[in-house]
Amino acid sequence: MIAMHCVKTGLQKPSVKKLVTIAVCTSLGGAILGLIFSLLFPHVLFYFILTLMIFALGNAVSFAPLQRLAIEASNPMGARMAVLSSMMSGSGTRGSLMAGSFL
Image (cartoon, rainbow, N blue to C red; front, side, top):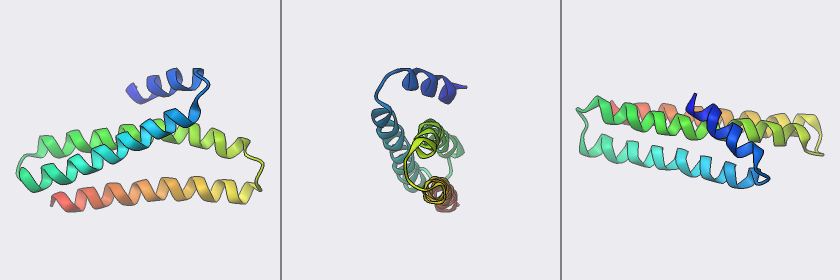
């Protein structure tokens, strides 16, 4: 719900690149905080869930504008979808690595 509101507000403004940059920074910040908290507080599950939610929020906010940009691009459709699916699978891999670092 929060991510949908952020995307709706961000897409009404002309700067989609700024929205994607903020979302990727949020995702990266959540991943770094997750790594730090898993090293400092390995037995506190709340911190891990909180940082994973921040990571997922950043990914959710970035995927809607990236999908729109990929569809509107002038490159061939195969290249557009390859870039989008690479971004999605990369974020899934980072999320799995975050979960694995906690255990």
